[in-house]
Every structure is written in structure tokens, then in C-alpha cells.
Image (cartoon, rainbow, N blue to C red; front, side, top):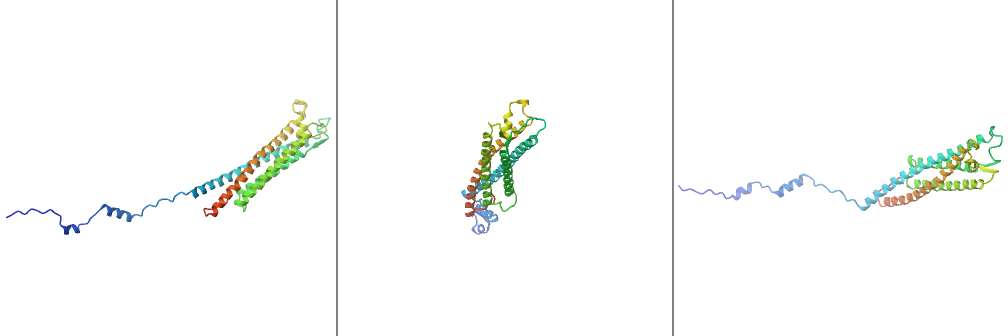
Amino acid sequence: MSFQPFDISPNPASESKRPRFSAFRFGSFSSTSRRPSQAPPAYSPDDKLATRNQLHVKVLHWMRIAIASITLLVSIVILACAASALRTYTSTRYHAEWVLPLWPSTVDLRPTHALIASGVILAIASIFYLIAALAPTPLRSTRPLNLTFTILAFLSLFITIFTTVFANTINARLSNTTQAGTLASWTCKWQGFGSVAPGRFAEICTTSIAALDLVILMIVIESFSVLLAGWGWWVGARVRKEAAGGKGEVTQV
């Protein structure tokens, strides 16, 4: 009996029936069972420009509201100071304690009236813009809001400049005469006399000068408002150009 060596070489027939697994098939299986992830879209320069415009719109919107709020507060203080000086003058014009009259024969009240009028107009303009910018009104869009702020800014600047020049001119003209005077020019002459000055002259002088100084401060504030108005038109033009290119639309500028 002869021994036959065992043939361990692979049988081609059996080898063809055996399932084959390869790295390629595993990769193809995993790729077909799960959708490949998609990369996020690129952030184009147009998107950066749109984001920058949106930021400019928000900053401009809240800066205008802040300026309008400051103008409203300062105008109320101007109105209160001028009205207080006028009321004090009315109550001390004929005082029984003094034998001689406290006031000259002619008291020019036009500077005080101008201060009161400017305070009222500035307060109304500020309230009007705050309503237009915050309330859901037809003015709360690009061009109407720009136009409203621009008109109110130039109007307020003109009023403050006119009031300052008008009041200081009359006060300077009547400061060196003893026959006439304004509330500020006449009462401030008594500064430094201590107890000799009438009791409420110091109060009238202080409130009158405070109102004049606040109007001068308003010139600076309203000049900044005019600059904001110009910036608003520039931002509005950029936003309209962006909207025309199909990048979006902004309703507040």
C-alpha cells in the first residue's frame, strides 16, 4: 500500500464558490449605505458685505435713538430752566419788601421766550422721531426714516444756532445799561454783592445761564445728528444697491 501525499493546493472550483471580501467592497458598501456629508457653502465677499451692512444699519438705528433721547432730555432741562427764571421774575417783579423797584423800567424777555420756544420745538421733534423709529408706522422704512431724521436734524441745528446768537446778542447789548436789561444780564450784575443782592436774583441768573449753556451744548449734539443723517443716506444707498442685486432687503435705516 502506497502513501499518497495530501494535496493542499487550492482548488479552483472551490475557490470560485468561496465569498470574497475586499477593502474595496467594504468601502463601497459603507459609501452606499450612508450619504456622504456635504461641505458648507463658501462665505463669499458679497455675504461679508451684507453682514457689514446689517451691522451698520443696527448701529445707526440705535445711535439715532440715543441722540433723540439725549436731545429730548436736554430740551426738557432747557425748558425747565427758562420757565423757572421767567416764573421767578414774575413773582418778584412787584415785591412789597423793597421800596425801590427790583427791575429796570424795560425788561427784554425775548431771550427767555426764545429759550422756551427752542426747548419746546426740540422736545417735540425728538418725540416725533422716537415714535417714527420705534412704533410700527409707515415711516419705519429706509427712505422715510432717513428723510425724517435729516429734516429734524437740520431744523434742530438751525433752531439752536439761532437761539444762541439771538439770546447772547441781546444780553450783550443790554449788559452795560441801567435802564433796561434781560433776565440774565440784569440779575447777573448782582453777582459778588453777597447779601446786598435781592434774594432770588442768584437763582434767576443761574437758571438763565444754564439754559443758554445747554443750548450751546445742543449745537454740538445737533451737529453730530447732521453727520448721522449723512451716514444714514450712505448706508441706505449701500443697502438699496445690495437689495437690487438680490442679496436681501432691510426695512430700517
